[in-house]
Image (cartoon, rainbow, N blue to C red; front, side, top):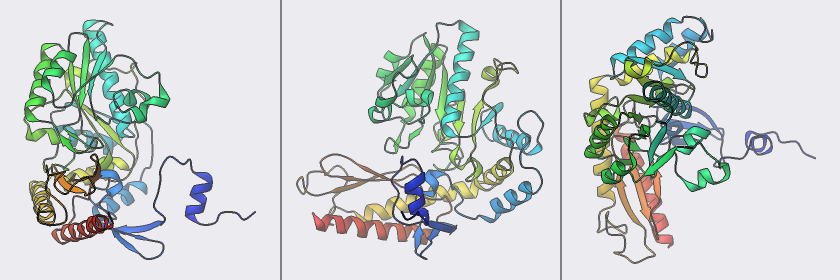
Length: 397
């Protein structure tokens, strides 16, 4: 029997098949482009699912990783580490937070935030205040606690029973949220911009209402900014544009520029209930802290964030021009203009997580999360290639 000898065969033979992958092997990348083992280049508008905010092989990140890796790799969280302390300081100074808890992923960060909320409610109000409110189309992760607040049947069905005490309300429906939030609720978790749910921004009035409801019922407001945070929307944190401040915020994905790292940012009010005997899972102490400082230093610059906002407008304008009603595609809201067999292309975006929706007998979403360093010329290339693909699909119908 022939043994597998290339990457795709080895992956098929030995890796648990939880993802479908295209038939090529990525070998290296530079900026917004990746190249496969056959020498073909691709404009990367996935960016590790919003992880590679500064693209591939960014010189500042390479330098930070190389320097720290040759100096100190890992000491656990039993000892002091200057990069970790400096990173925590930088995150607090650039946000509402007083303290930070580090972990390894976005799902871990959300698990931690919910645990902190329950501990806070338990210590402050007793054991009966433990329910958590989440919203339709939310995605907060696939670990057991995070999965319980990700109300999608296809994700949850095979893994029940899940974490109890979770209530689900319609997203962007403040009246329904008001019905769901009462004095038994310890926390409300929401994405300021839903990612996997279809790139749906939360209405400012909705977030303001959630803040008021949480204050009214002594509950904590958790913003999940794992995908939409760290510059993706044109502000460092997505919620900053609304003026609504959470009690906890979760971050990950671009946090360490490609290394596994998550964080929970919190106020002192929440942090005060955690102490050394209330241990969470160990947080990492590795070169990612130094690399993360490099990411934050690059992204948290007014001109960089203004550039993200400008690129978002350029993409939106160019995409709408390429899908104008007079073209074979049709405008947003005109799904039935050409009959049921014609796709209808719409767009929705907030910063640089634009959504291109191709509607044909029901909505679907093409999620684009390019590196924040994408150039205007590369945006033009993206629009040109997407338009060509959709035109080909249209003509084939």
